[in-house]
Length: 144
Figure 1 (tube, helix red, strand yellow):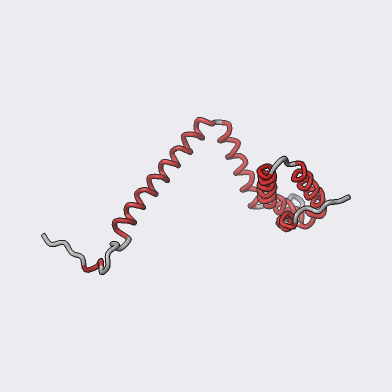
Figure 2 (cartoon, helix red, strand yellow; figure 1 turned 135 degrees about the vertical axis):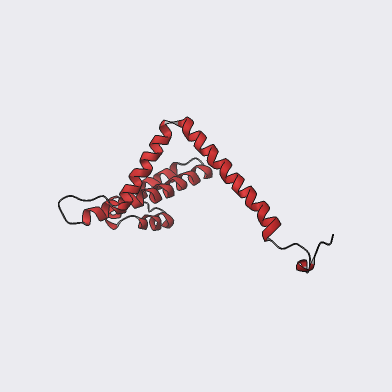
């Protein structure tokens, strides 16, 4: 007995190349249905959905790059721009995971920098850029 995956997941699989869907689509749907059926509660089902969506969004670019790479003619297939980006991102993540101290310092530095920028912009926006919250604010003057 074959059980179909929810329509939302079947639509999500349209992001994958047609040949990949033809070869693996039914199996992906069956695995999702099985996992959702065996999930103990609503939170577990939501987590399974999140993992399925992230999996499709992260694997679709690589699968399209792979599919387009096989369509080229010539002796040696060149790597596509997407394959290069994926390889670079993978290398960067492995490098960051290898040195957690450096990663923590880099993340903290970015967080402090972004937080300071947001704080300064908020003050400048409130004091200099936004009009005063009074009627006819442009007519208010200071006489000394």
